[in-house]
Length: 213
Image (cartoon, helix red, strand yellow):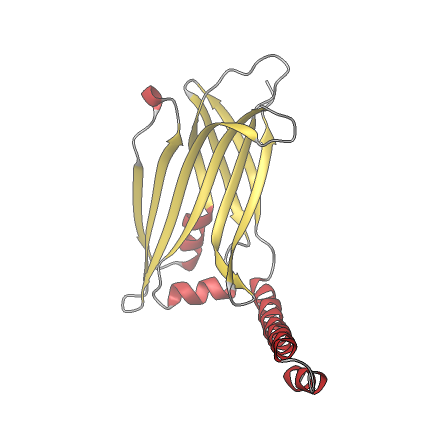
């Protein structure tokens, strides 16, 4: 309909004007279709994922961070898993210092990345699970070795807990100057979807906690 209206308006106009109006009509039509698709994707997502029970414990060599991600699995993600496509969640745990410049991001003092992966076998109806913990930003002499854990289960509840519940994720320790508070930030990336059928967007949840001494 928009294309036909553009053609009606462009009768008797120079060729370039005709092309511009047709191009605009096509973009509008495509954008409306993409917006409809986006609304459907948001409805499928359901309740927004949230990081809960964030707890930071102080250890001799640093910190240990525990948390869980609630409402992480949408119907789309569960369908993807049960179709046999491996699914990975990226959990990034960071220790943040002061801002070097006002309004700039805080300085990252430490970072640990945890990848939780599930693969479903439709023949055995079991989930193969893997959790890989890697120290990304650590003092060189204190960087822990990568830790890889595996599990196999037939329980959907155990699978979701493996993917979303993390306990005692290590972070390096730093002394904080007087009056400067350290923060722990957790960001969990839970898959990707496409906005307007073209632009990738990551579904994620983020939470921070100020460290009090």
